[in-house]
Image 1 (cartoon, helix red, strand yellow):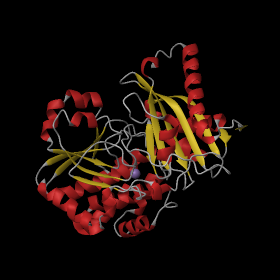
Image 2: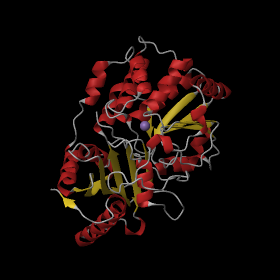
Image 3: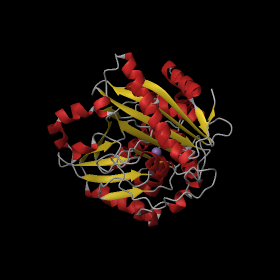
Length: 417
Ligand SMILES: [Mn+2]
């Protein structure tokens, strides 16, 4: 029931338009949300035109094999949407493999995949790279609920000469990826809603006696719920999509997914977030120290929790995540807001800026955002406790400084906990 998507986006090509604070609510940088965002050309298409265009794209690739790439830490919206794409593509004899390079670390996502038998595979970047020749079985790749910038696998596509065929997403436009068919709608709350619209447009005939369809419909409802804060931020389109799915989904299965318990590690991170949080101008900021890679999803879950505090509209939680496979460390953070006028994408880009290659350290969608800052040379050697502590203090201080420039430039702060 917790939107658990960490929308860390590390490649944003979108130029910012409105850099001025409008001064509302202290100094948090605000925009008019959707209204001021750049509208990708697809926004002007009617739903029939979109369905027709995707249909055409799929029929042109009849009989092919495609790779559907999800962000490294896929959430229910991504997982269910990719599944819907796979089923639609199947109607055109296209065989899709859905993959991601990171981890499924949220208990609800693990439950969702296990209970529905959701056909997704984990490919580690290293193994995918090593199996380079195997990529030649794919005639195209597809990005669903992302635009390639949040997957390590994206970089492998060009050298393997796999063309990008389809991008369907609701995050702010960011990557340089070109595709045959692009549907990026930042006004959409969930990619799952967009996928349901394609289904309703006639790209898949859902059948309530088909077990796979029932499970996919269940996953899609979960996707919509989880990207709309349990429908509380849902718009008409999301309700319409959920109403349509209600004819097919398995409510008991959904219930089981939603009841999956939080792990002890997640509880511990939430505890640390509570203890360490500081509130500045209705924004709560909490550093949670070091985390194992597998517990990374505890960060957005802690942000989800902190944003529920009275008088808080925005929460930012971050920690240092250690990737043992690659022996790399990175600062991972999540932002959650209930303030409709705060654009997480702009806020995060403004707070943390770009790396030396001009790529932003993060970004977001409506009401949620994330960031990832690689620690490079400072990675590892944490056996030395003093060093580990020092390193955390430096990053913790710097992240707070960067956030506070936007949140509270005059420097007054209120400590809680
Ligand atoms: Mn999404």
